[in-house]
Length: 259
Length: 277
Image (cartoon, rainbow over all chains, first blue to last red; front, side, top):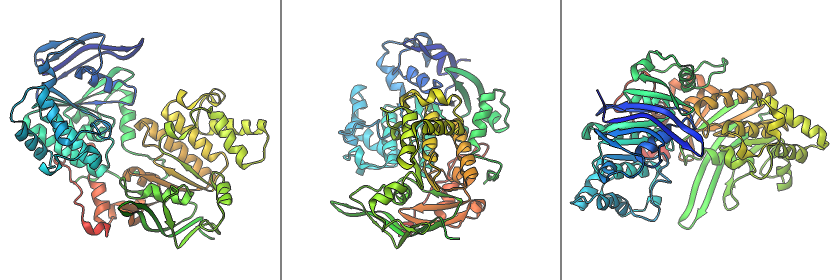
């Protein structure tokens, strides 16, 4: 069975440095798929190569049954695959209003009913029409990330690529954004590919995940296996320990309480 | 025994075109040779509190306090020169991102030697020796090599260790760590925290650990101070975090996704205007 997004044996090199070394993933339709790893592990490179923001030197990419090369892709691809970036302070044009930011993808893809779509997109991310003529610098980090999500959803994509969508946000805002993403996924039957360094978030959001290190996939796990600690790779174990917080032996970390 | 640091009713305000912006509104605490965590979200005034204690607040800000004492020294009254001597010698501060807080055009070794020679009258050779042993203390494997490297040539974790080495080389009595690990990878974070934990324990200094990560802080510190909108909303021992009474603290603890706990949707903070009152 093949999924909606299939990456096979992908290799990305930057001036001889191998950033991705024969990486393969197979993401099923409607699934939420996590990619975990430390900085430099290639997790963002993989996402960017899928999105067409990076070249790839070898291997294949298949989206919704259609094969794509590293170079030019059909416009339909960019409509079906959208991305939300890590830093909402850097990913929105500072001199465009929210209206202009949301209108641009509509113009590029030639979609009709622009006014209605913009209003609906803003409503969906919980901001409302009042935000339409504001600039991004007038918004908080959480509000900016909501705009970035609205911009991604406005083309009615099938796949949403999420590159650490909450790591620049406060913990309290993070919960709101994660809830918003889950709602959107349920409503539009979206497929998520989510990069994060936080195992807690990936466990919460994703059904399956891969652990990456030094440009390679170390392990493919289900979220369930993560909970029952059925992982074999040493590196996964280290990440897991790190996610449990600091413990010097002096004070025991508080046990996670179920609610 | 007098407290290492006494802060009473600290206020930091920034005059702006549209009136004053109050970053810190009446923070009071005293610190012994212990670890105090200050937790809050961005804009809660936690970093401004740390900077005010260091005397590093921006020039246009107004810092007011009923008392700001380091041991018996009144930090608000001593001349700037004396404050400058204390900074780095008695009170040191670790900043968030080694990429921005180390001097990019000076080797790591020279920066640490500079700190040492600013505060102590020692020769070049001895300064070099102490720097190397300090680099070793922060578990840099090849101190001789790292001594000659520039900050851009080392990783984030290594840079932050160099920063810790620089701050601890004069054996300060009080260390303020402002998000010392949030720019680092999770696995590296733990290593850096272990080093900090060990050195702070061995040297018996006071530590103020500023972070947005309540769980991390509570596992690292003896006491936690929770800030919201420039005010302290709660102070409690780390062990009693579960018994937090303020809804903000509870909400913060509750909204983090945890492995093996399924809550869809995640509980979110329901901010009440009276929290900021």
